[in-house]
Each structure stands twice: as structure tokens, then as C-alpha cells.
Amino acid sequence: MSDTAAQIKETISNNDVVLYMKGTKEMPQCGYSSRVAGVLNYMGVDYSDVNVLADEAIRQGIKDFSDWPTVPQLYVKGEFVGGCDIITEMTLSGELDTLFETNGVAYDKDAADKIREANG
Image (tube, rainbow, N blue to C red; front, side):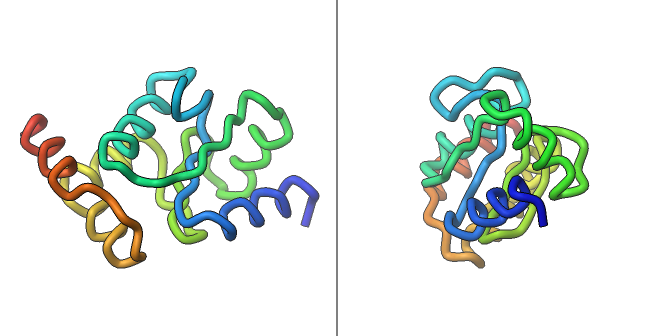
């Protein structure tokens, strides 16, 4: 395992929810990263953000690690969940709520319901 892969493995193992993104949760640097961070922020999820723009090895390494070609990438309890489109669909269908509940991740259910109402 490369040093980069080991670093990624350690990050997703030591944090319940991790978002590999362009930018930070306070200042996303692309629309897709902004959408996923916005959902997590609005739902009050405590998550770690990793700015792939700050480290080229991580930027490519996360794509190799997950065998997924794009960023953002969301991990919950060490498992790759998906990118922007998948997270958007899971949010609107309620699957993200279920994933968080199953894994003991705290989130604001009312906020999740409001997202669905606004997009219904």
C-alpha cells in the first residue's frame, strides 16, 4: 500500500464521516463539492473534510483508492458511499438518513425532511 493510500485509509478509519472535496466545508471550490458539503452542513453532520486541491497525491490517490473517477467522495464509517449525484439521490430518497441511522451518525432529521420538501 502506498503512503498516500495508507494516509487515506487512516483518515477514513479514524473519522465516522469524511468528505474528500475541492476546497473546504467552509469554502467549497466547485459546485459538486459545494452541493454535498451543503447537504451535510445543513443536516448538522459532524464530518471531516479533506481538500484535494491542497495535495496532488491525495487528489489522484483518492480516485485510485475508491476506483471512482471524480471528487467529491463521501465515506461513512470507512465505506465509500458515492459522489455528488449519488449523495443527492440518497438525500432526496431518504436513503442517506437510513445510512446515518444504521451507522450511528448524528444528523438533523427535520433538516433532512426540509431538503426533501424543498425538492419535492
